[in-house]
Length: 325
Image 1 (cartoon, rainbow, N blue to C red):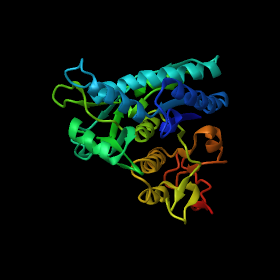
Image 2 (cartoon, rainbow, N blue to C red):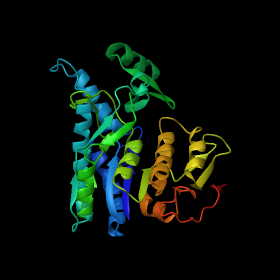
Image 3 (tube, rainbow, N blue to C red):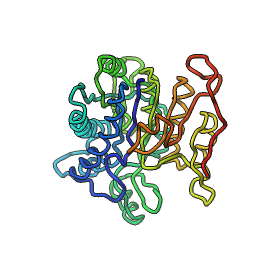
Image 4 (cartoon, one colour):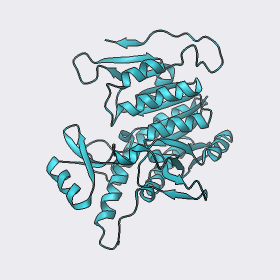
């Protein structure tokens, strides 16, 4: 089975932790264990990851650097995070998979320059602030900030991914048995000039889960696993009626996504639904420490195709949406 596994931000840095290299190395050490289990079970594996805390930190440092006439743009900072996080993941995966080739590939994600997301920033990056500090940064640096739970964070544009430019290269590497780490932070956002065909970077951070779903489709993957810090998607999220969702069709998950937080679980649910709708494969959302369990259906929320979208045309065993009380 060909699997794209998308690591959530908790795989690298949890809320409130200092963004030190040693802290992130410890988290990646743990994440590599569950990823290696997929490869050792005989599956082809592609790993994507987030970069919100890391790109936010680099952007803050760049803006404060007196040696720079202007801060580095977000596309360049995104490339830096791909290299930094990619090398940490490759090192840990190689330690657990000594007989497999493992490579990190810097990849670009094409977006539409007319995407309305450029006018309505929603993607959280960087560390948390008090409201007063966030307002000060808005005045001093021209940032857009927004509440994230009880805290405030910087938000930037997050246009929809249209194509991963290096998908064919990733496909060739996977077919040769290589474990590939790519599309980090949603990929480096670029636009293409319709007249010249030339590529240009842009000020944005593409959602990593939507990029992972698109990449999985371009690779003809059988499964998309979105690994995060919760065991399941929950119905009636944030209320006393919250219940764990064990399985759902894409339509059921999309209906539920409207009540999920826009900055965290909603794009995960929408990405999982989109992958299953587009490919007829399966998608899972669940705990980072048990990726194999999500695939086997023993944990997490498993999204299966309905009768019309089954990849092989067969009628699958499809139960109604299953909720655990």
